[in-house]
Length: 193
Image (cartoon, rainbow, N blue to C red; front, top):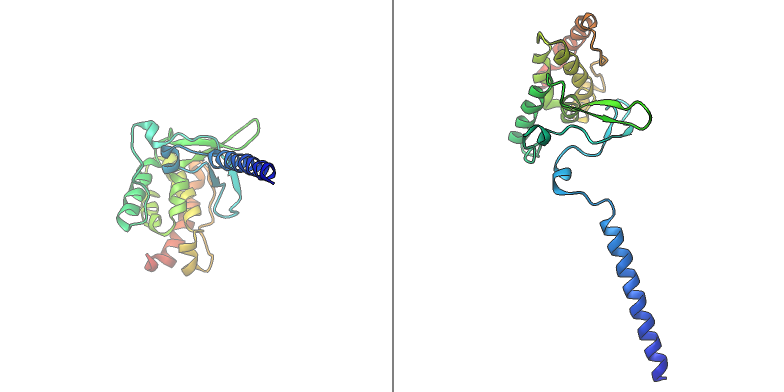
C-alpha cells in the first residue's frame, strides 16, 4: 500500500507540472509589449459600414514620429477632445498611414481618418470644419472619416442609421459633390452636436 501511494504522488506531481507548463505556455502566447497595447490595435474594421475585420500589418504609429500617444485616447471627455484634435491635425500628414491585408498588394490604412471614424460623434464637428481646407488630401480623408464617424453607434442613435454617403476619393473634382452631401447631412443633424 505504501509503494502504491508513492506512485500516485509521483504521478500527481508529474500531472501538476505538465498542467502548469501548459498554462504557462497558453499565457505567454500572443503577449504584447505595453507600447503595442497602448497604441493602435493590430486588427481594425476595414470600414464601419460592413464591420468586417481586416488583418493589418504594423502601421506607422505616432511614437515612431517622435510623439507619445500613451495618454490618447481615453474615456474622459477632455482626453477624447485632445485625441480628436490630435487626429484632426494628422489628417494632412501623408506619412501617418499603415498597411493591412494579406496578399501581394496590401491596402493603405489611413490612421487619422480611421481613428476619427471610431470616435464617432465627437469627431464630426471638427471634420465638417476640415471640409473647407485647401489641401485636397486632407479634404479626401476628412470626407472618409465623416463616412466612418457618421456610421458610429453614438451617431446612429439620433440619425436612425442615415450616414454621410461618400467615398474615399483623392480626385479633387469629385470633392464638391461629396462636400455638399456632407454639409446637407450636417444641416439636418447639427442640433444633436
